Image (tube, each protein chain N blue to C red):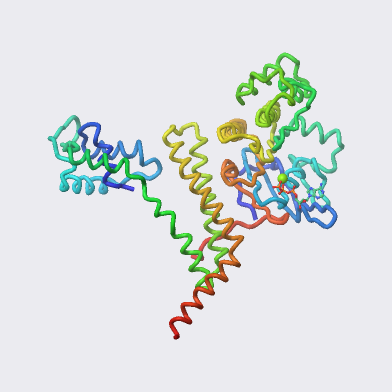
Length: 237
Length: 187
Ligand SMILES: Nc1ncnc2c1ncn2[C@@H]1O[C@H](COP(=O)(O)OP(=O)(O)OP(=O)(O)O)[C@@H](O)[C@H]1O
Ligand SMILES: [Mg+2]
């Protein structure tokens, strides 16, 4: 059971999954997960290591095909799309932040952040201008000309956040997005993610094992052994 | 919290009347938990009785008459002591939650559920505090007050997780203690 989001909307939800199952050999990474994410919603997926958090995020974003069950983005089944459609979707409508930056090693910070904008058809000048302003928001503007190999882990992660947010995605998928950051920069990043949800009414799917980070989301989905744990109920009235 | 020292310190900078004191408390300290004005006036009476504040006249800038209070020398030296006495850490040695878990085990209630319910409540409060932190309407004072709450809640949450993992062992300890006491009583 999941609680309903605070800003309930009519119409098709942004993301939805039904009975998602993922099996790796004998491991049931996900074991029947139903989820709905509306525009303006932010959810934290929490649970201990190996509980299926990343797998769920990967299924919801079309990075991993479920063994059973389905996942939709704005009503479109992610697994009946062509690879080309899925990668266009990830480039244009989704933004990804992972624990390790996953930046393109050959490109500078500025080029990394501009890349998806350019692929989405934005001209070079405006793309770089947007990229620069995101780098500034994340406090790494002075690294614009450096390549990932010339940055610290935390700097790379902030560049990766800039890259994820620059195209103004409809859904931000963040898997331990502050894993490489100190407290101050972690708060800066989480603040930015939350502001995106509030200002642009996009959605945030935030995977973390840290309660302090999960608290940035409006609601939480707790996973245990690939299943959603129902919320604890208090004393009988 | 309405420690008399708290109100005393708020009054120290200059003479102040009860209404203003109430407002100052709300602005600086009462972030999410305003004090009832009755608490202010009863504490004021006590401070006056103990010679820590004294009435220094009645003003009527606007509205009803108001008695102004000033901190006395005794009040100031009391504050000097209070500020540099560390806060008691006793509170953390046996908080209610610890007792509740042990007693749940002793009375054969579902201790895991005690923890689950508390965890949910802690997380909800943590979300609320985080919202204060990220709201553009919050001032810096609200942010540091929220941070203090968040970090304490986080410590409790970690304790809840680690206790849950050890529940089976603790159950055993509680039972053997209870058995020992029982045996001793029967001798
Ligand atoms: N590609 C894979 N091949 C085989 N098993 C996998 C694969 N990916 C994940 N698993 C298994 O699926 C389960 C869930 O993994 P997942 O990565 O979703 O966990 P998680 O909750 O994200 O954990 P963590 O907090 O450690 O990142 C684990 O038991 C893991 O070993
Ligand atoms: Mg993971």
